[in-house]
Picture: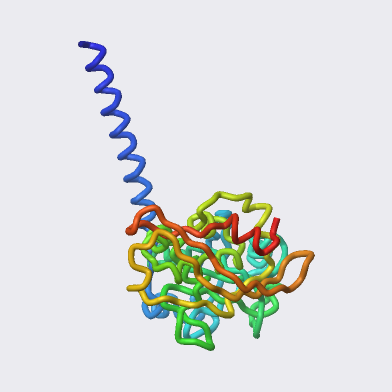
Length: 275
C-alpha cells in the first residue's frame, strides 16, 4: 500500500514539474510579441536605435533605423556591430532571411532580417549600405504583400511557425517548403517533411530555388484526401551542378483528414538528383 502511495506521489510531482517547465516555456514565448508593422513604425521611428538578437545563435548587435516606409532600413551602429552581424552570416553577406528578435523600449518583437548590404549608408561602421528588417505586415518595396520567407522567419521568432504550418492549406505548405529550402532553414523544412533527412548535408547543395508554376485545385476538390500530387515547375541552382529546371510533382501525404500535410522529401530529392 505504501509503495502504491509512493508511486502516485512521484507521478504527481513529475506532472507538476512538467507543467512548471511548460508554463515557463509558454511564458518565455509570450514575451516575444508579433507586433504589426504599423505599430512598429511608430515604436521604432527613423533614427531610433535598438538591439537585434539572432534567434539561432543568440548573438546580438546594435542598429539604427535610417529609412524605410514598408519595412525598416537599418544600419549597424559601429564596426564592431557590423563584425558581429557578418559572423552571424558565417563571414559572408547573404540575402538569406534569418529569424531575429528586436529589443526596444516596448519589449521584444518578432522580426526577420536579410544579410546583404545595399543602397546608401550614413554611419561610420564598415558596412557598405543598409539592410532590411521586416515585421509582421511589412512588405517589400515592389509589392503589397509580405515576403513569404520573411513571414516564416517572423512566425518562427514568435513561436507560431509550427501552428501556422499545421493549419495551412497544401499549396501554401508547398510554398513554405520551397522557401525553407531556399533559405536553407532546417527547422522549416523539418516541420514540413515526412522524413527526417541529413539536412546539414543536403540543404547547402541547394543554392537557390523558386517556383515558376504550380497548379492549384479548388479546396472542395481536395476534400478528405490523404495524398495529393501537386504539379510544379521549379528553377534550381545546385552547388557544383548549376542551373536546372524540374517539371514534375511534389507529393503530399497526411494520416488523417484534419492533420497537417507532409512533403515526401525522399522522393523530391531523388527526382531532383540531390544526394
